[in-house]
Length: 330
Image 1 (tube, helix red, strand yellow):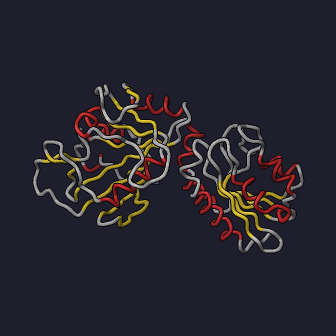
Image 2 (image 1 turned 90 degrees about the horizontal axis):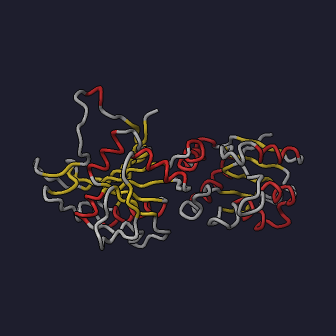
Image 3 (image 1 turned 30 degrees about the horizontal axis):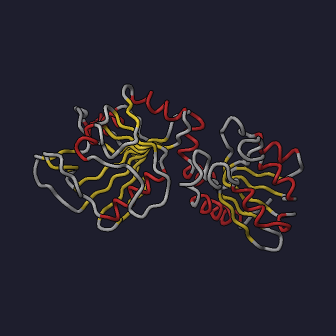
């Protein structure tokens, strides 16, 4: 069926999903729009765990206008009972005549079952509208559900010439307040934050969500022994293989992990190919010498063929600093 306004309505659903980014995990941050036959729009976004899913929020907002309407939803509606009832049954009961799904849900509890249930009840279902945009929005969730591993974000902050601290370890502050607030948004989106024990000893960070950013404090993980009385406490000390540590966090339902340093920890995750997204804050500052600490503490490649090359995802001005986001090439 022709749907000339479909992309615009799915974009509204995607925008609604972003409002649930910090609230929904470990559930997916889904958005939904009910477009009634009278032309009214009713939006919904996934509530915190135990709350309503996006489809139900939009359907309840629409009320009787849901009958005969089209529902646009970024991710396939669930058809099983978890903390809440099946969204498919709420959709069928509402009288919705057509459902447009951005992306099928790879979760083993869903994985096509929601689409099949709707079609078996006589609801017209279309799948794949704005699929690429939805896949980008839900990339951490999709990775976790398909591999059991969390999405790994490595956050770095440096001067233009690559310095992250003086030779003595002083680093407060290379970037400005706006960049630091942006980094706290990353913490609020992450189920866990990881630093090395050396960073705890040198900087004594809290690793909580602050600077006016709303959200739940992430689980704090220190690679190595935690000094008594450290501000990071309560925190968990973990040691051993980094991939195994990530697997343990993924098994606990943690969808995204933020790695904050220091340079040896950053090198470990980077050199083992464990980073999904690099977020680099570059300050308009220059150390102008070789006696400083750099982003990665380890042995790099000996030839140009061995350097890591990714793709620019975004470049934004944050206050006076640049925020550069890189992903894997391809």
